[in-house]
Image (cartoon, rainbow, N blue to C red; front, side, top):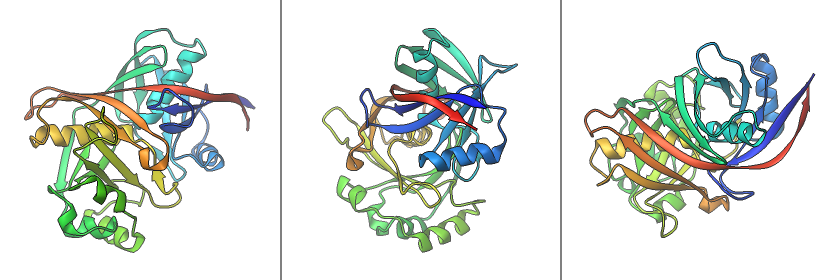
Length: 289
């Protein structure tokens, strides 16, 4: 069978920026192994598979090379931008059925805004456990790392400087110790999401990195779901003065990405996080499966 696809660079308005995602249209019925094989074939971090929904406008399934995940940010931008480019949806609001719940989205051309669900704040993780996993010293971590999810959990880790962010390097042995500490089910969930409170450019307010273990690529160029979790962490802990800011990621990889972020609700009762970015459709074609 042939499935139409679009390869979209999400959180970017130009080719080869942000984070790539392949979107397979009308393919949500495919079995898990086929979906994972598609991700492995592309060498991307994630791919999405769309289909009809009984509870929302569109059903979206999100896959890593190793498993299905409930939600992901940059693939959401990619999926909606791809469908808008094909004329499958119009400008305006729509809803996505995901394993993390119904995600409200607004689209205008290549600009996509999603509202991620209210954050779930999990346990703090000792800096002495997180730091070795990312090749840094505990002193490089400014605030207690914490597991936070706005649809997908990450360990939000605020670093002391852009220099520390640049120096970070994955240590797989220490990462295994970290996953044992937090009792994670696998090595592709709850990774440390590294952020500094200074942008990569004059326009940015934060800059981040996400280092990944195999079978994923070594680093994620832009992580929309972690950006939502990071925003909730920063706002709840009083580390940012305003709920709106510009998040940047991927500049050190030569794939600069940008999101406009707004935390919804007061610091002690966050209702959700709006994460907005653009999607550039780089190529289109067919998968023959």
